[in-house]
Amino acid sequence: MGPSNDKLTILVTGCSPGGMGAALAEAFHRAGHRVFATARNPSKLSPLAEQGIETLTLDVTSPSSIAAAVSSLTASLPPNQGLDMLVNNAAGSYSMPIADISLDAARDLFNLNVWAHIAVTQALLPLLFRQSTTTATTIPTATATFSSTTTAFQPMIVNHTSVGSVAALPFQGVYNASKAALAMLTATMRMELAPFGIRVIDLKTAGVKTNIINNNNVNNPAAGGGGGDRLPEGSIYAPVREVVERAMSQEDLRGRGITAEQWAEEVAGLLLGRNPPAVIWKGESAMVVRVASAMPCDLFEGPIKKMTGMDRVEEIIRRNWATGQV
Image (cartoon, rainbow, N blue to C red; front, side, top):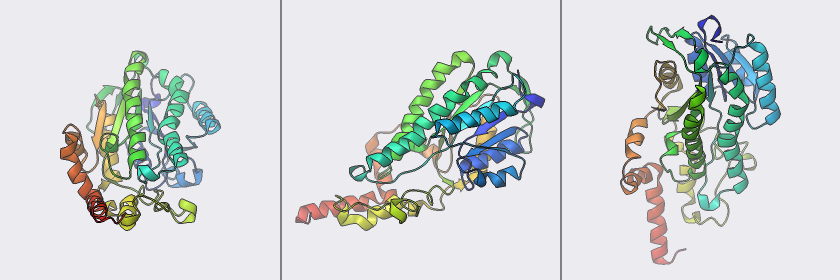
């Protein structure tokens, strides 16, 4: 059965204020679709609820929370109607040199950034199958910002990865590896679910102004025993602790990027369009990373080292080794 009243039913995970999930939920809502915004803490969803966006409590790392959210979503839909789009957006970050990472923290991040998305997807596949291409409905996509066209919508899973899935960044190895894992799973899901009429999209985001830097494990007071993570005692980077910890904090990247609202409008426009690309690249410098990822790594690593301060780290450590100060 197609969408009720020519509206798509869309669920977005990770919709806490100040993030891209909330901005994307608002963009879909403005486009006239029925949106379910989710977050682990329901109190954070109040600003979206006030706009008429429906909300659900969902901790994507909790099987019981996933089951409860799916049950609530199913109960709120008309009989035989399913879900048109799932946006797996919830994510966390973790900054630390690989030599110093906490394996427990790394496992937790993979659980949130990778396995939780698979769990949510598996739980919602039955509702996506209800909207398969065999019963796709022709819907209008005219909004204030989207062109006035008509298209048959194919049920869709959108996995929000990152340009970091194709570009190594010093001290962000665990985060980037989790996004690379999700990107590979997304590419595989695209082929595996195509026979069932499900479209799968990899959303690779670059620079966007959100609260992700404030919430990382270095800057968030809830991390690292109340003061945020720092390099452990005895770290091989101890001689350059100040430089490395500043790079870990991503302080120099704060304030860079396009607004979350601009990003969301552009992304929503593509996802609701006639033929969304299998991979969407959005955000400041997304195209630069896309091109650079196809270049030999030695051409790309120089600018990355300069941007992150790794060039200074390398210079100081090499000098210390040369003078025996190790």
